Amino acid sequence: MVPDRAYWITWYDLPEQDRDAYLAWVHGTYIQKVMQLPGVLWGAHYASLQDIAPLGGGKGRVSKHAGAAEVPQGDGYILLFGAAAPHVFADPGRTAFLETLDGTDHRMLALRSGERSNIMLEEARVHGPDAKKPAPDVTPGPCIQLGSFNSSDWRDEEDMARWYAQWRLPSLQALPGVIRVRKLVSVAGWAKHACFYEFTSLAARNAHFVHYEASRPEMEAWSKEVVRRLVHATPLPIVAKRTYPPLD
Image (cartoon, rainbow, N blue to C red):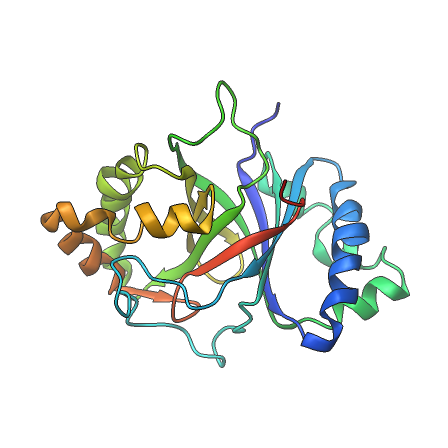
């Protein structure tokens, strides 16, 4: 299997009255059309979950987020595609791909609001204890957390890189419920950085991830300091449940 190291990610909202028709189309038609593009390895769709406990509990650590004037604010759904290399999504490119779609496709796409997209490249990846052995399934897990963000000052980015390399990613390799965690960087789109967590379920995330740093106060303090210097796309990282492929 060719490894997936590149991702086309789209965040957006939908009007409630059109939700069922749209989901039937995106699951039954649109994802299949994208997956016919040479080099696309998988497609997955997620619906955001509400009233999610942030890491550390309480109100969470995110203190800065971009406003609607800077970046679209859609956060109800996340559509992801994986490929081996980012140019899979640049050749022929999104605009050229959209020109191949029919009228129904365009009517459905027009239902989206607050839409933004990123083409991203994997910087680093760790597998948790719940990754399948010997080879994990390439399709993302049943529950994900996806935060996208910029550094508020470029001089803070080396500290952020050290934090991911020395603490955040290594610390999750033994955490129950974790399938994979991927640190991503942008090729095109807002934002420059993202972190893509996969869990076996929302219950596993809440039970094991939310307060997992509490036993290491020095590392928890470092995490708080790093996160508070970031500008997130939304007030909190998005936690979502997979709607396609269907869960067993």
